[in-house]
Image (cartoon, rainbow, N blue to C red; front, side, top):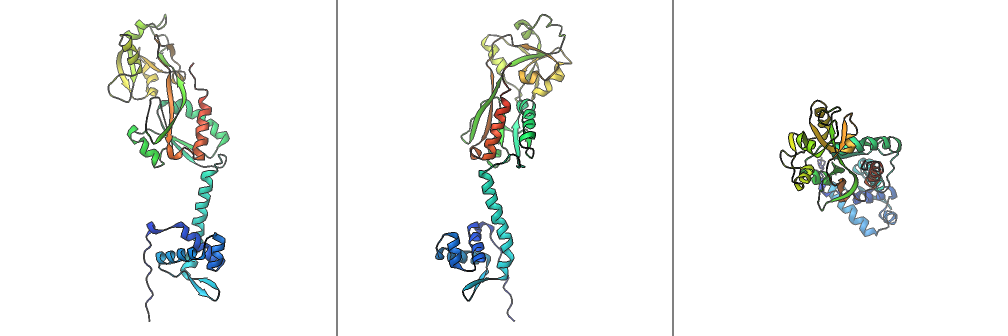
Length: 309
């Protein structure tokens, strides 16, 4: 008795989904000619696609019976998953062009420091509850050197930052601006008559920076005036500042729209400083994606309230 031929392993890199569209058409129509009519291609093109699929799957798939093509057992076994895969592909392509926020369950990933986390994300989430209840948001910290690659592979959708970030693969848009103010505890003994430049320079400061050393915008502005403040504490995040300020005589400079959330005294800076500009970044590959376009519109809408005081 002749042994059954073992099927050869399929090289996934060789799979062409167009071949399965032809396979489905032949299976449904029962002939190469009718399949060609359905697909609006020539019969030789259908025959060529079938030959490639036969070679790839190591099976004839269809045998001629009179004027029709009868599917083999292998063809019968793969027709259902093949049709499901084609349906999923068509649905995915359609959804990439048509985005419905009311029914979408898409998860958007953000990377931002205190700006988005405290001021914009709560407003954005409240807006989504009414307009897109199935959408979820995640905000996490990521190294700046990994931002472009994370956006390119789709694991990161948006990056928000107060500093300029330039890369040819990223798009950016200004979403808001703010002003630095000075934060101190209530009844601070040195600030009974308000905050003067002399008091500002004399008191100890908390400086927020992700770098271990180096000046920030406050220090650069003071240097132009020939002045220097006294930094006694450095922190990575603005969110750690209030708990330190309330327990000490230290003061800190931070954006107004963060400072206003805390029960602490807020003073204007005793010198001029340009507004802080915030930018939203995304990968060029997502620039025309309907879901991304919609989310950017929502971010811009909630950011309208994020203006200098």
